[in-house]
Image (cartoon, rainbow over all chains, first blue to last red; front, side, top):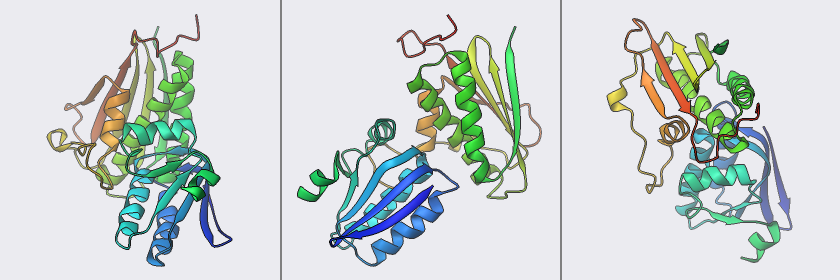
Length: 109
Length: 144
C-alpha cells in the first residue's frame, strides 16, 4: 500500500493505492488520524488505486469519519473501484460516507 | 478425486496477502465467478486475521495452516494452535450500526454456507468453511 498526501490549491487529498488490510491499515490509520487531529476539512480520499480492502481498512475509515464528525469535518471518498464499492455497500456504509464518482463532483458538492 | 492444496504461513499480517492470492487461485481453479472469488478471498482473509488477532493475540511467531479442498464444494480448513475460540460469542455488529469493527464475521458468512469449528481438535482451532455451488448463476464452472 502507498499513501500520498497532496495539498492541491487548499484541497487536502489523501491518495491510496494497493491493498488495505490488517497489515497495512495501521499505517493508514496513523496518517488519517494525523489529518483528523489537525481538523482538516474537507478531506478527500482518492480510492482510484485501491485494489483491496478488508474490515480493518473499513474500520480505519469509520474511525476517521467519527473523529471528523467531532469538529464538523467532512470526509469525501472519491473514485471507489466497483469491487471496493461493493464491500462498502454490503456493510451499509455507502449511505454513511459521502461518496463521489469524480474529484470534480466531490469538489463541487 | 478430491483436489487439495495446503499452505503454512507465519501468523504475521504481512502473510495475509499470500493467503488471499492462494485463495483466489484455488477459487478460480474451482471455477468460481470473479465476484465469488472476491468474496471468498475476503472471507478467508478475515478468518485468518481473526486467528492472528484472537487465537494468537497478535503473536506473529506462530503458524497458520490453510487447507483448500476442491470436492463437492469449495472447502477451506484453517488451523491454529492458539486460544480456543468460543463460537457462541462470535457475532458481528448490526450492519445498521456505524462503528469500527464487527464486520469480519459478516463477510465470512456471506461467502461460505458452512462456518463450523471442529470441536475434536484438542489444542487450538480448526475452522471449516464450505461454499457449496449455488444455482443463482454466480458460481460459473470455468472447466466446462
